[in-house]
Image (cartoon, rainbow, N blue to C red; front, side, top):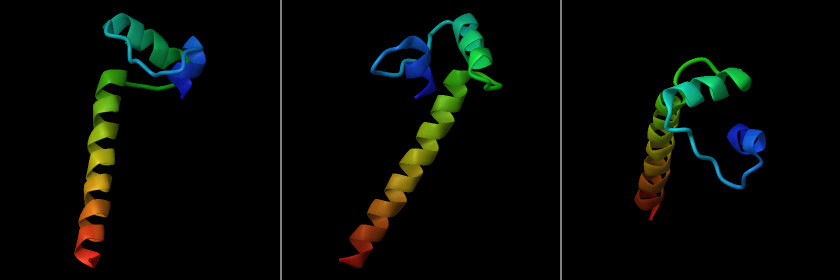
Length: 60
């Protein structure tokens, strides 16, 4: 949401340029590489979804 708010766009796109990512991270108060953070969040979100779906299938 912060990326969308900063750019006024309806979608979130992490800049490809390391310099632009660093600038964006600094402006929104995030330390580290945004691309790495996005990957980490996706991995965790997928793990949660797999667990939920697995539990739902086991309940049937």
